[in-house]
Amino acid sequence: MNKGPDTDDFLEEEEDDRELYEHHNIKVDKGQIMMRIDKFIMIRISNTTRTKIQNACEAGSVLVNGKPVKSNYKIKPLDEISIVLTVPPRDVEVVPENIPLNIVYEDEYIALVNKPPGMVVHPGYGNYRGTLVNALAYHFKNLPTSKQKIAHDVTLERPGLVHRIDKNTSGIVIIAKSELAMTRLAKDFFDHTIDRKYVALVWGNLKEDSGTITGHVGRDLKNRKVMTVFPDGSHGKHAVTHYKVLERFGYVTLVECKLETGRTHQIRVHFKSIGHPLFNDNEYGGDIILKGINTAKYKQFVQNCFTMLPRHALHAKTLGITHPINGKKLLFESEIPADMQSVIDKWRKYALNKELDTEN
Image (cartoon, rainbow, N blue to C red):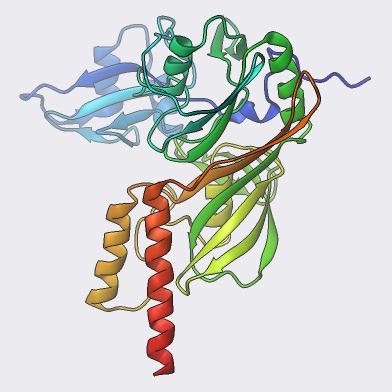
């Protein structure tokens, strides 16, 4: 007999979805001589070995000025070294904060929040305050807590959360307000019966009007901060993204994405894998001009778009659920936020003018 997830299992796709937590932060002294970073860290941090440090570097867990480095990196004066792990420090706790929330629906058992771009969902490396979880802890009392074991003696608690979206992705997030609601919603996510649709602006002109991207998604073996697709299934987890074209603007395309699975950065990394990164996605290569013409006017146009939308172009627009208590089918939609909509409108106008120029 198959066992569904309990609240400790939460979501099966969450296993790869671990935040990175800063365990050590070292600011190199102004007068420090150049030295290999593995040797330097071994001197500065007690109870560690050079082998462990080298393994951490290999896993992308040692950052200098925010970027992963190899163990042979030579430190320089005023470098800032961070050691990040998927296991949180033991003193991490959720602090309630009075942060405004856009609650689009609420009853006794669930709430739906329209998360703005730029808000982190839960505390992690570099974001211990100001997250959605901090806001939830303030606005809702006695939320049930989903738990995820991320080490043999460490559990990460997420009050009210049943799923998550990226920091710079806007859109709807569902919150469970009771243990029963959380358990049933977790099972629906586990069984992939939740209807989730996103709107994305991607580079290039997709060949087909609709399609499906399939490929295991997991953390990159060289840089643990980003994800990658493993077509041979050797790493990561099975992931499926269905898409259809909404509008074509020549050098970029507006698409609707329907998630069959919910891996970390799934839409972003899937579209990169087929050569169509999300517009202005700085982690997956979409923050440079990938398609278009080599003119100063066009380059300035794209740069203006990047300035208007200083994040990847992705919005969680639709969330369809079965109410965990009364069984009613509910469908929620949120408007595309102004920054992303303004860029879509700008590309639409550009494509129309280009077409008119061609006709003339």
